[in-house]
Image (cartoon, rainbow, N blue to C red):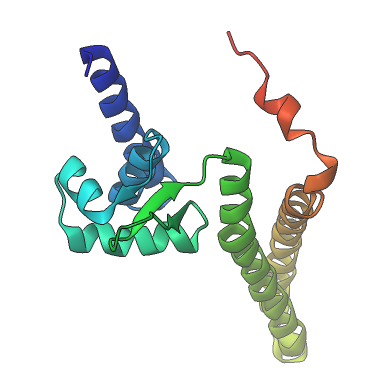
Length: 178
């Protein structure tokens, strides 16, 4: 293979590993996804382990995670008994999968925790000293700001996730930068 093709493959796979780490995923998961993404043909667990020089167990565990996130899927290969995988190449679908499961859950949890905090402060109001009431009022103001932020985040997520059919992702992917 030409040295430039090898260099581009290695830098892209390495970059996907760093990017995955940035977003809170494992570097191996990112490197696996990058390897699958840059391969026109599905790859087996053995192919992935050998190519990335990592254990087959690590490949298997990370591939299950990639499948759960909708970033890769198992494909059937005629005459083969091994498991083969290919990457989800539609980046908007990958983003929707991640946002739809992880971020939506975290925003919902944050709103729930903040709502519980408001409830606790309101229940305790009659038992608080004047100084504590001032502090509770301050807490409620800060919590209201946080709730507004997370409600906005929830609306933004739902706009992307719920209104996908209204967004022209094709036009967005054709934007030329630089």
